[in-house]
Image 1 (cartoon, rainbow, N blue to C red):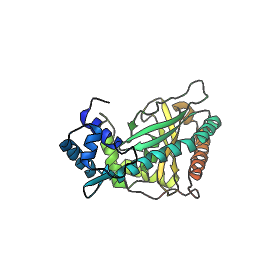
Image 2: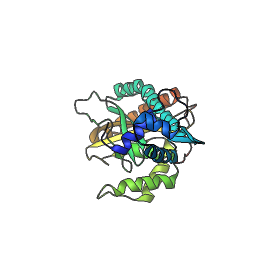
Image 3: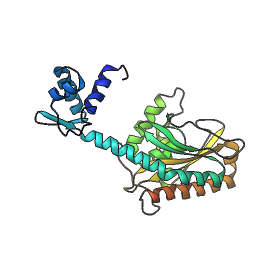
Image 4: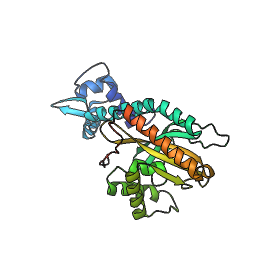
Length: 259
């Protein structure tokens, strides 16, 4: 229990279906959970409005929103499992730290990381949200969204970063450039001592579901030869992960709507 009363009760209501019951009335749930019937009715009606439960007459069953959330978790696990060996190969080829990042709302989150072999190397933190309006991976994750929606998300992120140098039209131009070339490079945007190259990961239906990021010191990626090699190797990695996820060909995904 979390001592957050409403949340604990909501989870207890969902757990009431764990015995395989397909449909339950609020009175049955109240008895199983140990709450009053009026509380069960009130909470279950609210849960139905968010599609955590579906209503059929007087009965409730687990809602379609849970299926969607479960599918998202399953997809995330699949992407991470498929990507990891390719991330390790990219790290070995470049010597640099490699990450896999997902977008969540107006943040991006590292979900896998393979630390580089270099004596001086970059290192992030898995699970720590990062702003979506700066960095190579942010633009890769945003470039195939609807442009106006992407600008809205990025602007919201910039508004939460005091002193952010935010130019919506310049950001729009960069997104278009990323879509055209299929990769992105950033230098000193979030950290003045680091740079990064990023490429998209595309799933079987053509959605950009993640970004592969190669990060290094500013000086190393300032070397044109090394940067060119890193871009080429990162693109091979991104395309290999995408192929393993069922994406056909190396073409990049069309714009998608923001979920």
